[in-house]
Length: 56
Image (tube, rainbow, N blue to C red; front, top):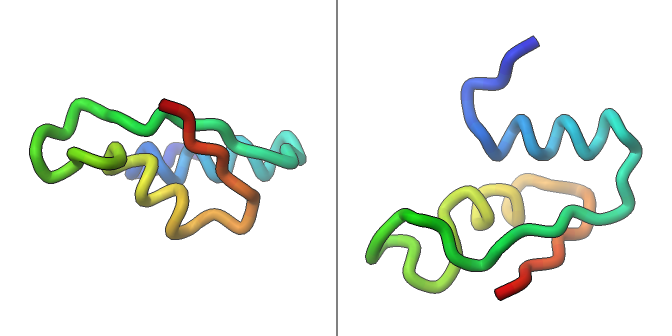
Protein backbone atom coordinates (compact mmCIF):
# COMPACT_ATOMS: atom_id res chain seq x y z
CA UNK A 1 0.00 0.00 0.00
CA UNK A 2 1.37 3.38 -1.01
CA UNK A 3 0.51 6.64 0.68
CA UNK A 4 -0.24 9.71 -1.39
CA UNK A 5 1.44 12.03 1.13
CA UNK A 6 4.78 11.69 2.96
CA UNK A 7 3.27 12.58 6.34
CA UNK A 8 0.76 9.74 6.04
CA UNK A 9 3.58 7.31 5.23
CA UNK A 10 5.52 8.48 8.28
CA UNK A 11 2.54 8.03 10.58
CA UNK A 12 1.60 4.66 9.06
CA UNK A 13 5.14 3.31 9.43
CA UNK A 14 5.30 4.47 13.05
CA UNK A 15 1.95 2.78 13.76
CA UNK A 16 2.96 -0.42 11.94
CA UNK A 17 6.17 -0.65 13.97
CA UNK A 18 4.34 0.21 17.24
CA UNK A 19 6.59 3.22 17.85
CA UNK A 20 6.24 5.26 21.02
CA UNK A 21 7.71 8.42 19.51
CA UNK A 22 8.26 10.04 16.13
CA UNK A 23 11.34 12.29 15.84
CA UNK A 24 11.40 14.89 13.09
CA UNK A 25 13.50 17.87 12.04
CA UNK A 26 12.13 21.35 12.65
CA UNK A 27 13.16 22.78 9.29
CA UNK A 28 12.23 21.39 5.93
CA UNK A 29 12.98 22.79 2.51
CA UNK A 30 9.62 24.44 2.11
CA UNK A 31 10.82 28.04 1.96
CA UNK A 32 9.09 30.97 3.64
CA UNK A 33 5.80 29.16 4.23
CA UNK A 34 7.64 26.57 6.33
CA UNK A 35 9.92 29.01 8.10
CA UNK A 36 9.36 27.78 11.66
CA UNK A 37 8.55 24.13 11.06
CA UNK A 38 8.80 22.01 7.94
CA UNK A 39 5.44 21.44 6.27
CA UNK A 40 5.62 17.64 6.63
CA UNK A 41 6.55 18.03 10.30
CA UNK A 42 3.51 20.26 10.79
CA UNK A 43 1.25 17.69 9.12
CA UNK A 44 2.62 14.84 11.25
CA UNK A 45 2.11 16.96 14.38
CA UNK A 46 -1.47 17.71 13.35
CA UNK A 47 -2.47 14.16 12.39
CA UNK A 48 -0.47 11.74 14.54
CA UNK A 49 -1.77 10.11 17.70
CA UNK A 50 1.83 9.15 18.50
CA UNK A 51 3.89 11.82 20.30
CA UNK A 52 6.23 13.78 18.01
CA UNK A 53 9.59 15.20 19.11
CA UNK A 54 10.74 18.06 16.90
CA UNK A 55 14.50 18.69 16.86
CA UNK A 56 16.33 21.64 15.44
